[in-house]
Length: 348
Image 1 (cartoon, rainbow, N blue to C red):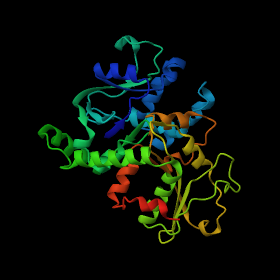
Image 2 (cartoon, helix red, strand yellow; image 1 turned 135 degrees about the vertical axis):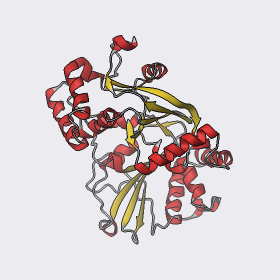
Image 3 (cartoon, rainbow, N blue to C red; image 1 turned 45 degrees about the vertical axis):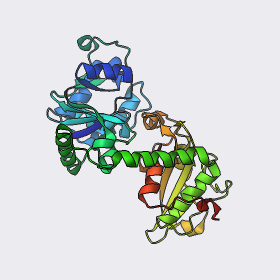
């Protein structure tokens, strides 16, 4: 099994656990509420061999039986992925600009503060013993675009496919032999940074929306437009999209919520997309909707988890929103061959 596991939750404690040879996950509430229940979660996966879907449904039932009324089946899937690890499994831990690779040497277990000498107040419920294979590896030097994209997945963890697993094995060998993935990575990164700096520092919010609209036309959209801000129809008051980009030949329409930020972005734009459910334009009603959140800022690593956990926010559809953050859009412009010319802002 190959797993991407974030340790941004309780990061200080999680970093200490890494130094002790453990990758951790949250859900300390289970252990604090009922240690037997926490162990039962482990047994369900490791001994009863319950499948992921049934575990998620059972996890949701626990919302009614414990003080954790906000539990959802989707959150259960993340814990299931973690508890499914076996000795020999590979874990990739993404960090800022770098990543670590660990090999699992024991099955996951309920966290014991006595065993590790950590505070019982920490929101750590489960852990898995690991050994480091490689740490602080440069993303730009060793990751191809596919793996790099998956390491940007904002939720707690992600199970890699069998094909990805082969790439990860090759990645480990490349790191050992010091063979970078790309010959021109540093030069490309410099170009992405220049484009990103131009977008964040030289153009305003309205021009940013126009740039996205022209990008959509460049990749094949017909009649991409920036709708009037009062075009909400029967949607909730929070609902909003900044660009509508139909692709009739593909039978789809891309709705974009754009945030022209320099620094950190919150998840308000995602909430706006979630609330946008009713299209008033008859020409778009028969197209399958896709939603993109494009921000020049960076999302906090656990922003999506926090959004899911907020019981006031609809969780259905979050996983279907494409998140383009930081320098991602600059990279998309470059790789699509988009003409970087000021005339783009003169178009109607």
